[in-house]
Amino acid sequence: MTEAVKTVLEHAFEELKVPLIKVYHFIGNTKSENVIKRCGFQFDQQLIYKTVANGEKPSKSYHLSALEYIKLKGREL
Image (cartoon, rainbow, N blue to C red; front, side, top):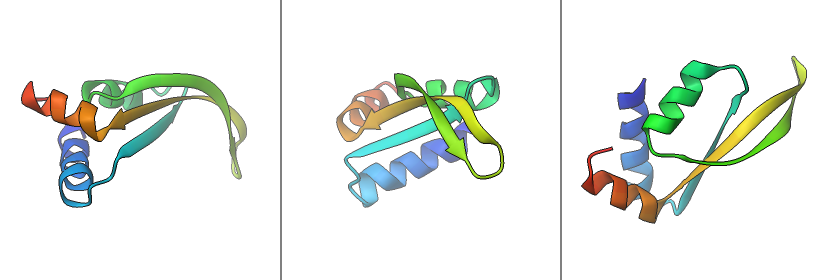
């Protein structure tokens, strides 16, 4: 999954010129958390995410800016 996310990041930052990407995962979903961290996203905060199917669930948010991406890419994500 990490390689797929890296491909999406490359397209978003290099082709579409997106300045910032935010991602979220439910607390306890360690597979998603690990992919997010391996791709260089920085932790923002814990929050309660409201879903239609499951009601309120504790979650974490992360961000990655274009500048952070360029720095990480120089070190090969």
